[in-house]
Image (cartoon, rainbow, N blue to C red):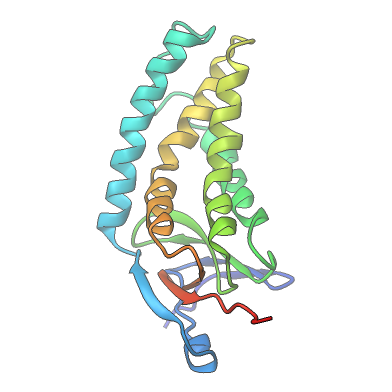
Length: 201
């Protein structure tokens, strides 16, 4: 049986397989319950549809409101930007992970998407920040720059990122609907929640 390709940097891993379920915490810590099963083709297809719709609206916004009035997005033009964009996008997600080096960066052959995951515990606000930051830094901020400079490469970079952020937006809605006073963590591709314990005075 072929073993997955794993490259180690300290304890961070790069893997080529599905996110592996490590559910030891369910036995060691009481109170964790399964909230969402997110590793499905439907999940990623919905994210792709949202990404395509938002990118079309984004193209219109660039042409209508920025200096790139003749911008026309074509997926196969400036495709090389994806080589830079994907690792940068995932790295920004990682910056907001607790204990960044206890994380996995990987590529799923089944769904053909890159991902980052960890078994560490998130607060709801921290997980939302991790989900949204690539969208803000790689799409919203470059869009603002286009009000002052005319540069198709920046426009394409922002558009490609928005196209790939559709899955992040679906993930965001899944997280937003979780109870406010709960902690969150991933077990493979599943999202688990646990009521946050408050110390009584």
